[in-house]
Length: 223
Ligand SMILES: Nc1ncnc2c1ncn2[C@@H]1O[C@H](COP(=O)(O)OP(=O)(O)O)[C@@H](O)[C@H]1O
Ligand SMILES: Cc1cn([C@H]2C[C@H](O)[C@@H](COP(=O)(O)OP(=O)(O)O)O2)c(=O)[nH]c1=O
Image (tube, rainbow, N blue to C red; front, top):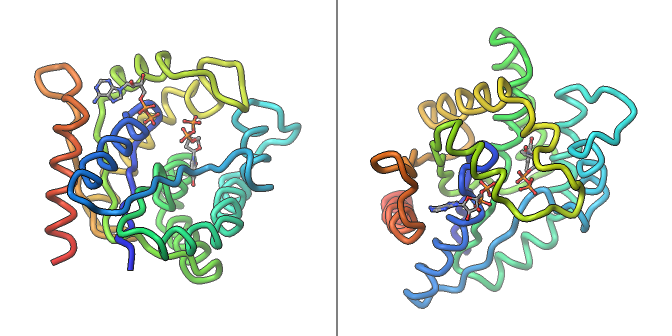
């Protein structure tokens, strides 16, 4: 049975870089590891529509619940890929997973409405769509200004030419997303959590250093 590890955080937090470093560290230990990134823009109907949303091409305003369904649909359409990958690996590293849906959609509603929306998304993804829960979710707690600089350094995306997509352009949303992640990590929503500080003395720690902390947290989570 594969250990399901989810790397989470706001846009530009360093998730893809960290996922690659964790993969390298675990492979050095002889473990079979693969990364799956969500959304899977080119591979699913949900992912395709999310590319349109993030690029600002949707003609209608997307409500948090309608968006949550699209993100969950992208994973439902990927259920076979997840199952096949679980069968041939020791660890799957998700670059975003169900907690991203919770953090981003709950960040768009008033505090009083958030608990009901969070319960609804957890039930949709883990009960109705029967997606497996992670064994550990990692919150990369990268400050807003660092993450913003790092978004600008990212390579061009398939779905948009813009430097900042619909979510990334919204600074207030990014701040709210960070608060939702902190609350989930504190409450243990969806899975056990490890909260990791990627910064040391104002600069990003080396990816291998962040990865070593996560590999240690995995050992604790599986005992
Ligand atoms: N630990 C790190 N040290 C130095 N640069 C980093 C680190 N993590 C991420 N970056 C840089 O920040 C940018 C965004 O990183 P990325 O991993 O794509 O973030 P995310 O997947 O969270 O959007 C990239 O240019 C990457 O090289
Ligand atoms: C996977 C997922 C992502 N998101 C959001 C987070 C990001 O703002 C956006 C796109 O994901 P992201 O990983 O940032 O894609 P890229 O690096 O190619 O820009 O979708 C959700 O709201 N729910 C989800 O379930």
